[in-house]
Image 1 (cartoon, rainbow, N blue to C red):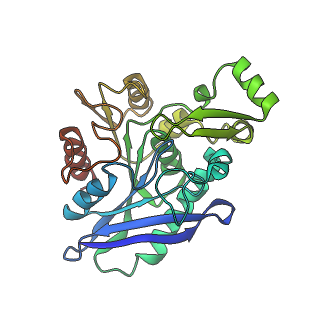
Image 2: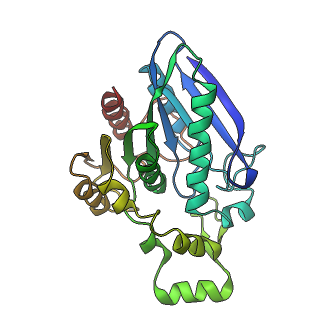
Image 3: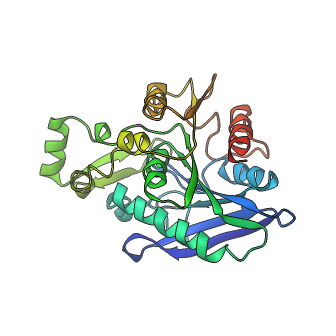
Length: 279
């Protein structure tokens, strides 16, 4: 297996994106699966590296990256040393980052005899699923879409009208990270950018107009993103394939740090189902 770790490319506002590529050096014509992490996530979270290796072993080139404003840095890509960047993140920046990643893959992997960039799949977890869904509808280079515990709506996550008014008045609101205990800022620009781009950022509209195969996987024990959101995704895209995983939580029964060399049983199911879907 070949691993190209921590490639540095330019993202939104010329801020750096760190990107990893996993592939099998003995297999030709490998599809490319680009993975988008979720809210308060990063490419090296939990079991994502083991998952990436499993995809490569199955004959799929697996690409994962940190969104440019996820709060990580080049020197410290794990966790959130750059809370100012985190506070200035928004959905439009993440879509721009994903555009840069897709283009980088098509430009830099196209001459690799093991990799077929013309068979590119987008895969997103949680909030990353929503970003992937919108981009999959926009970009003709994408041939399939996979959403894992994916969100179905962005607007409802901003809170009530009173909460938004208070946010506007203060200019910032803070969310505690349950694991690191950091007070993570969201500047009001996040909501302003959403309003400016509300039509584009409509996941329902994106899926209703999606013309490529779509796999939806959601755990029945997910308390972070309710399975009703997956039901919405399935309802909006009649041609989608919806898989419920019994007893699986939001991160498919993994956690950070993940010290085992094996995946959880739920994550093994995810890898098995998604690899078959890609082929």
